[in-house]
Length: 141
Length: 110
Image (tube, rainbow over all chains, first blue to last red; front, side, top):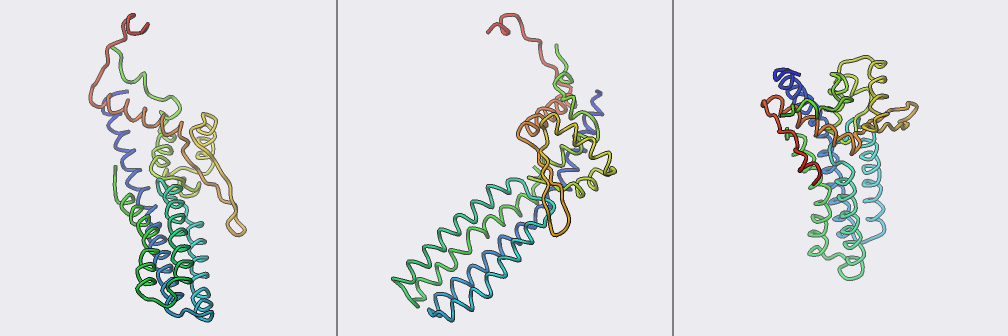
């Protein structure tokens, strides 16, 4: 193999990398949309502090999360590190969501000073993983 | 002196397979139809090259259903990623005109 051929091959690999990486950028939308849904859900649950409020919040949030799951499953290109990133985001969200709900229900019912920060906190894990995926999709390294 | 061409991977060296592996190295998984369009080959050509890569254990193939359709998803295995990285390093060395000294008997025997 000549040096020119090696350069051509390296350039070809770089071109492919630049084409493929942006295709994983969809995960940013997924992560941020999931985070915003969680923010709305936790905030509504906390502020309304009633069974009717919980029902309405769930009726809105559950279909959105189902649609997001279908959207993610249908994507033809999964970004680099997708598995660990997704598991980390959902696992951390699950812990924060659980703590927000159980501690909030028993100790801070209807207390905005608990529910508002916890709603923001619950939006962070998947928003962060979404932004990581976005940064990776724009990187060429 | 030894030329870096000896470190090129025989399986990845083919132009179509090189493109396939380069694409798969840039993502976690890629569906067959998207990879076909990226590499710009026909279904049959891609299937043949994927079979070779699968035989070398460089690519893992999984099938799943979305609605009524069965989709094929392709992933570069850790072995495939390692082979690709080594192949790219060899290409860089060739491009840079790097050669390495052959190991002496003392080095070979530790």
